[in-house]
Length: 305
Image (cartoon, rainbow, N blue to C red; front, side, top):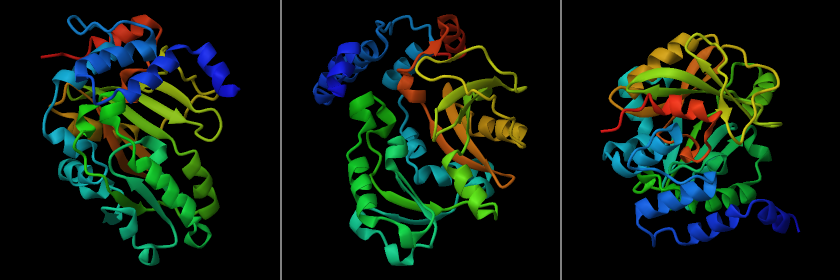
């Protein structure tokens, strides 16, 4: 009954479901245009894109460089970024495997994080705080489901088309306070820098993951911006500026150099900065900026060639 009510309230959701089943059959341009309408209710103008969300769709279709596959791969991006900003900002890798059957469970430490390398957000992430308490069967089931995710087919994100499906184990970061860090891990704040032509202009702060997930935008001087993502609220309590905010800005600029638009993510744990990931299309460009004039303002920072 809940699903029926959802589709009654969101009739375009039916269209999105049907469209996903047609993924791989439609040309990329047709698929992206249809999905954009099903997600936003707006027609996509690829000839004269103006808004941030429209330009992200244009970049999906026409800005395709071979190195993008390396950049979105959660494993290969580590060396790519380390060569730019240094290994000290990279979360250490414990192991990498081509299949679930190859995971070396016995030699994993008591605490670790498992990730799929080809995207999928939280669906492809397992945080283990105590291996002795880990439900291995449930973990394998979740990773098997994550292995089926294909962001190229479902969202039209070309960089993921040829990413090799693997699993990596990463070090579980801790500042020495076990209970405090375990709580912080679930509420870990993401600092996501929106970079335009190699310059970070805004930071999207994602917080309150366990309760009411929220997104807030700040400029380089940590002024709270008057826009937000259409489907997500601002935090009830304004996020606090991280200790190493300026350092993150410098690192983001180095990583984003040479790209018309790139989002570079960082964490701050135990007083240290760690690189998270690189994203070309925030929420795939289907969650528009509101108010609409700010969607246009952000879009004006992207130069298309």
